[in-house]
Length: 356
Image (tube, rainbow, N blue to C red; front, top):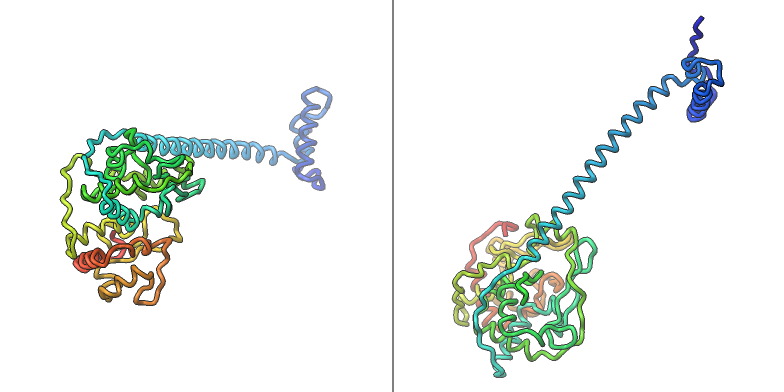
């Protein structure tokens, strides 16, 4: 006679305790110390369905582990690929044939070089004393520093030749041939030989600052944005190094000279000057203004433009934040330079905001 026991034979026992009893009874059955059959044992414990469910659960957990393992493997491979591909670009060697520019100790040349350095925003990364400073310190984005440009301890000026300066400023390439990180050389590429020579002449006279900057480290998030083309990390990649040199216009209150000066605005406002979100910036970073006739500047006058860049106060009553809009640097331009930039901006075709 076969005993058929409902699986709720011991309903008052918790499921976990019933499982323990089952394991003990099974062990006893295997050791032949019990007279119960294996089937009877399971029925007595009221765990026949639990045993089946346990088998199903183990299979489910096994598949979950396999899927999670596969996903983890994909993530590891993706991270390795991002690191490898970006490292290849960061360590690429550029064989640049640099041009010879005239460097002078004449006070007028040095003064012009200082004027360019101060009005083109070099201090934003290298500090007011050009001794270097931290630009970004974030474990995910990276640790980016403007190098010490002086001849002090930790500085670069003392061991750089004129050719090294030209290679770095105009081409974004270090003396060893590797590209410089976050050096906006694509903007300085258009400096005339006279202006570049003046900048180099001035940098050689800057008072020494003893300040050793930490090495630059590119974080994983910045590497990903770099690989996806969301942010320009290497100015050297955006320059046609072997192309004929562009001819710089003579200084004057002209549209052409205004274009020459306004190249430095393209980093934030885009090559079409239509503004919008600045690539690679945090979510809370304010969008750049549309400088074309589609933006607010269409209602400004030349006097409004000059006053805004001198004081940071716009005609609409807004105070510009110099952390995002470097009006203090741009405000160091001469009146004629600002008027030239204004002429160029007024000549721009209208573009929808954010189309860069």
